[in-house]
Image (cartoon, rainbow, N blue to C red):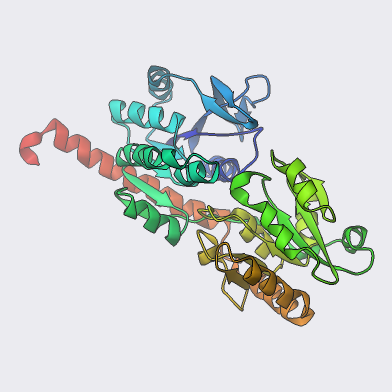
Length: 383
């Protein structure tokens, strides 16, 4: 099979979208398929290939005030040319919005079947960043893009229902795998834990982007819980403000390679504070690391956390309940350990191999439906 992947972001930017694409490319290479990646980026920093597949860096500009985010300036006709040259059986759109819209039009013009993997609640980001008036336009664009797809796959029941409410057709669910070898309780480092908490404090951790939509400032609600230390792993434009809001917290910055899973496994409790998570891979990685997780009752974590078994969910915005749930785990190490074991057990079958097997079936169905549609258009009398 020949798969063209068009994404809003790719290496060297590391995020949930990029991580999913990397795992898919590794799977396609291992199973003898062909692929190409098209994504906006800096030609000087972006890789020329990954897993033996070419990476086409699309012209782009950086988003004002957020250098990690790039917006493609590539026209539709250029994408049509790239797709024509590669001749894919199916086009996979990863979290499409800006370049995804142009790509969707290009694929539709060429009659190539396409699926979209919905991963980022961009319309709601507008409200979070103070541009609530743009949310309506955001959902209009989402409908435009996804109506051109054979199917759209949301990562959770919450995001699926959200898309359906906003008029997106043909929505299914495709989750995310987790690397249970990389994220593993065995990687816990007592020495690292002790460097964070030299007096034996319970470590309450966060791992992810430090940006407005992640609501990391809500971790301040946990300040002052006796016998605790807050540890923040990640980087982003909000770091300076967060360091002022959480002066007693340990800020580790962005961690990579083995440093990241070692840090997560060395925490005692994991908190995910964002309310716009369509899935939240960080929650799944924390569970794989054997940690109980506390998160708002909104978005992807609703599917990932089994309350009172693998962690707790709290009402979004209710900081008193957030603090109460974390305090409950701080005060009961036996409950923490039991929840951590249950969290690890819950991800055992969620491997990328299994999830990509499922994705291949979605590709095949898209190709089948695309062939039927092409046949109807070429012979209208048979429709």
